[in-house]
Image 1 (cartoon, each protein chain N blue to C red):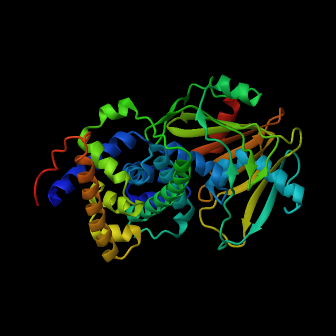
Image 2: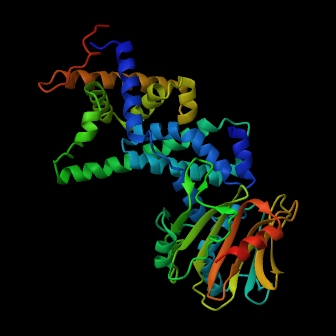
Image 3: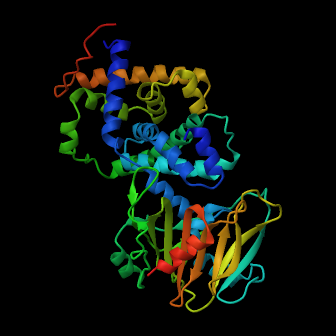
Length: 257
Length: 191
C-alpha cells in the first residue's frame, strides 16, 4: 500500500523534475512578441508596429473593396481615415504567416530582393540590442504574410527588422518592399468618434523637404514612429522605444545607408 | 516592474509591459501546461496563446485583480482543450496502428525510475485529474486557489483531487507489480 504522504512526496518531486527537464529552459517571449505584431491590428502601438508588415495587403484589400474614406493627403503618402467607435470591440485580424526568426542582413536581402538600409556608419548606434527579457536581438526576418482573415495575400515579400541602441534608446527599423510599386504609400488609420488620452497623433509631415508619416506623442509632440517610402519602393518604419525629438529622428534617417 | 505596473504599462501601449508579465509568469505557466499536455512544444504554444489572450483582453482587466490566477485559468483551460482534441486524434490513430513511440534514450537516461513511473501513471489519468494534481503538487496551490483557477466549485476540486490520487495510486501499484516494474522506494510502506 502506498501511504498518502509517500504518494504526495513522490508525486511532488516527480512532477517538478519532469516539468523542469521538459520546459525549464523554454521561453515564449519571442513567440508572444512576434504574434502580437502579426496577430492584431488595433488602435494603438500594435498597429503601429505591424503597419509595415500589414499595410500593403490591408490597404490593397481596403481600396479594392472601396470601403475606405477619401484620401486626405496627396503625394507619396496618403492617409485613409477609417471611422471607428471608441467603445466598439476591436476586430482581431487573423494573419497567416510563419514565425519571425533571427538572421543576418545579407540573408534578409537575399530573401527580400532589395538593399536593406542600416545604421552601420553611425557610431552612436550599437547592435545587437539587449531586450527587456534578457535576449539580444539584431536582425529579425518576418516571413511574408500569406493570408488575412482567410483571404490569400499576393505580392508580399516579408520584412526585416533591425534593432539598434542609440544613446540608450532602443530603435527598431522595419523595411519591406511595397507591392504597390511606384504608387503612393497608402495607410489606413482609425479615427475614433471620441478623443483618446495618450493616443499618438498621425500626420503626413514634410521634414527636410521629404514626406513622412509621423506618429507623435500627444504629451510632448516627440516622435514615436516615422514611416516613409523610398524611391526604390521600399517602406521603412522606425519605431522608437522612447519618443525622440525631430532632430534625433532626422539624424537617424540621415545615417541610414 | 510588478504585475500592476506591467498591466498599466501594457494598457498604455508599451510592449515592455507584456515582456515583464511573460518573464514573471511563464515558468509556472509552462510547467502547468506541460504537465497537462505532456508535450513541451504544445505547452509553449498554449502559454503563448494564453499571453496573447491576455493582450487582447488587457484593457478590461481590473489592475486590482491578481494576474496569476487569471493567466493560469486561461492556460489550464486551453491545455485541457488541446489535450482532449489530441486525445481524440490519438484514439483514431491508435486504431490504425498499435506501434508505440520509441523512447528517447537521452530522456530516459535523464529521468530516474521513480519519476518515470509516476509520470507514466499520470499519463493514464483523465486530463481533468491531471490538471488538478499538477496545480496541487507541481505548483503547491491550495484547494481554494485551484477552484478559482479552474472555475470549479471547491467540492469538485476536492473530489477530483481525491479521485486523481486514488487513480494514481492504483496505476502505480498495478505497474509496480509487473515483472519489468521499476523499484519504487515510496511503494511498500503501509498506510
